[in-house]
Structure formats: structure tokens, C-alpha cells
Amino acid sequence: MSFRVVLATAPRAKADALAKGLVAARLAACASVLPGAVSHYRWEGKVRRDAECLLVIKTRAALFKKLESWVRRHHPYAVPEVLALPVAGGSKPYLAWLAESTR
Image 1: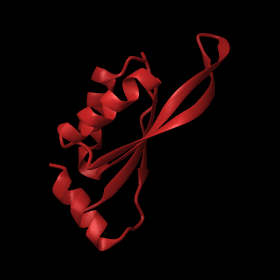
Image 2: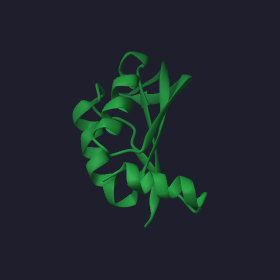
Image 3: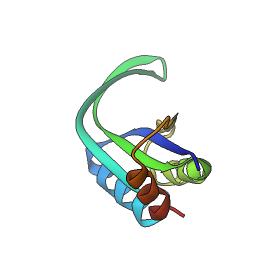
Image 4: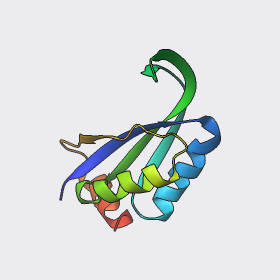
């Protein structure tokens, strides 16, 4: 079984709800909310800067498409960040828990 770490940014007011919802839906075993991110990006022809939270989401690779769809439905941004990184390894007990905690 393969796993992914998914990165997403969100406004502080929505980050906890997104993390809780992903875990409740069993699309993620864990979603850590890291406050204090400052994102600089280009949107609609302008360079912008916003305070955000970074979500670090742990899931099975097979659930990524469902997780992405869920985030897009529940996220307040028109184009939310959803980046999946492959997990090259991890402790066997943690990966077993990750597999058990997702469906």
C-alpha cells in the first residue's frame, strides 16, 4: 500500500474545519494545521500576500482523488492548493495506523 502527504493552504477561519472534516470522512488519518504561513502568489494579474495556515494531510495514495474532490467542495478558494507528495517510507506502526484510519 502506498501513502501520500498532501499539502493545502487555507484561511485560519476555515483550516480547522477542513482538517476535522477530512479525518471525520476517513479520507485522512491525520491533518495537521500549521498556523502562521504567509503566502505570496499571483492571482488575477496581481501579486498578493495573505496570512494562511498550512494543512499537512496524511492519507492513502488510493484516496487522493476523493480527498482532492472533498477539499475542492469544502474550501473557500476558487482554486485551492492540493499537492500530493509520495511517502518514500515510514515507521511500520505509523503506516499501519494510517492505513487503518482511512478507508
